[in-house]
Length: 117
Ligand code: 5GP
Ligand code: ZN
Image (cartoon, rainbow, N blue to C red):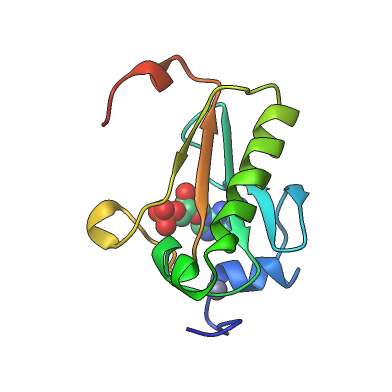
């Protein structure tokens, strides 16, 4: 756990060292378009600080998760998606591939009404 990690792709994006399509930001996080979208609207909300998953971010600073959810709502609504789904994969067994906290924001698909949970 640290503020940044040299070999982390999301730390690199947060630092502006590799390009990403930025949809919005606040003092704590940025929202970008996912490189490999799984829905018509697919954003990633990424905190500035490096922690390996949402629970670790919450343990370090409980308010950090609130900042992520607020930004997720802002960018989803700005894109016309008042209805959306938030997902925070935690652990490789749940599909996590980037071990820097992020929340997927998915919207605009009729599949959103299908049940996963
Ligand atoms: P995870 O599987 O860890 O929950 O989600 C990681 C997400 O990050 C994937 O949906 C993947 O498409 C996205 N991703 C990985 N590398 C990059 C990148 O360099 N730029 C962007 N915009 N998205 C990325
Ligand atoms: Zn990182």
